[in-house]
Length: 341
Image (spheres, rainbow, N blue to C red):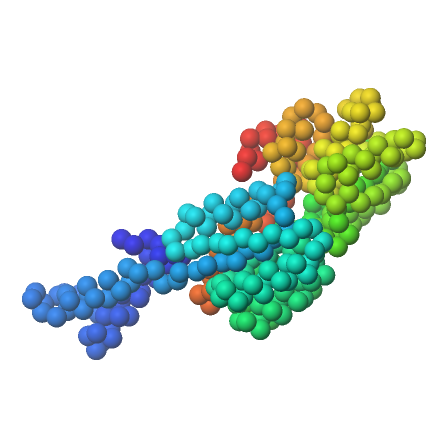
């Protein structure tokens, strides 16, 4: 039995066989075959043609230069595409914030006649241009991990995302509970142009506002980077701003904050630090008590859904325009093996 043909289910294959037989026989597919007649030959002709995959798709993946969580996404996309018959991927990378370079990469993919595009934006300000280019070329487009701020798009466009507002809320709510609802909080943000950074910060601030005893005493941008976060926090500490908790928009910046706290000789339990993503490095920091909380973002599932949605759009099959992948709270009391990728 043929179970899958680049996404074809067994039931669809059986239905297609019956359809070909109806055409060959001029009526409903018969249950019995005439030995030595032409019915078996028609059946074998139909089956032989259906043994060829219906779709052979090449997907162009344009993404921000991979590091931390985006490296996990890249690896997940590559691994999953290799596991599928007749599906290949080509990667192009652009530095964070260099949206115009990513737009040029999209143009090159379109010129190369890829069958679909998966985009992890380098800069959300150029997403409208990317969407227009894909629509003008009639090429399916899937945004993964970070999408445009608009709510709806015409054409074959889909989004595989996790709700970053929820991530910020989960992270801040747990830290507020650990502080017994009272304390000074600092926030380390990712790039201002990145939707995830803005929403995670918004979610954290919403929860903090619900606790009268919690105040936000410092904010700064570290662009998802560990070293920049360490320098930012070192500056706060040097100027006398010693928060009770630090909320970082991702694990890399949370680890950078922990590095600065360690360098200042402050005990790890004196300042609670929270991150987002539950990367392998983040989970190790949790195990060593350098971080108090993180929020698991499922890179493997985002990768699989991005490829699956792209293939469905190539076949003109319906997909959910917003394909949500849930976040999960991780604390030091939970088994980090549950969040292995």
